[in-house]
Length: 203
Image 1 (cartoon, rainbow, N blue to C red):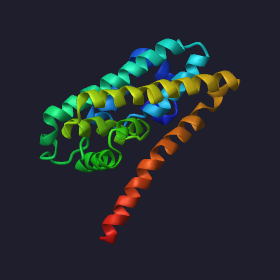
Image 2: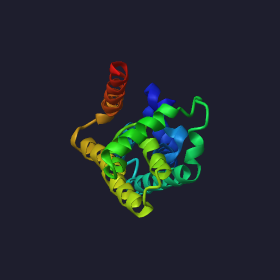
Image 3: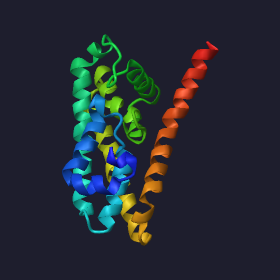
Image 4: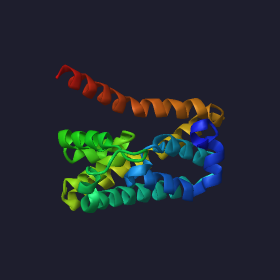
């Protein structure tokens, strides 16, 4: 994928608003979207907005609705079909461990898990599905869904926009910045996975 191979510039310019909306929507609630790099894409789009390629206002509005709608679709998918997922065999797009980790995260943090999950790749995708499986009250879910979208889908592009305005020619350093965001965003999930494996070995 171009945004992982280093040519994020090409991907964003080719995909535009529609492509960014689709990526954020898919990563926010479609179980096969867990591999999409939403954090780095949003930040990079914010940087490009600072250079006039996007309207930061329109970008924020679109990513906000993409995140909220994606999570809502994930919730209802989990609500209606979730129990069947645990009877499925593992495949490339589905693994029971992914949902199990998200369910554990959700159980430990309650409603705020929907907000916190926004900042955790993989967990971000499965948290709304697990909320649906657990039959979380939808009004409560929607509240945390919107709050998380404000902090993540609106906050990260704005951070990229402000940084792009502050540092001249920041696009020349975009690849290391994107790689850094990917590493930092994955660290909590990796640490949690290592702790889980250590616990299982200890038992």
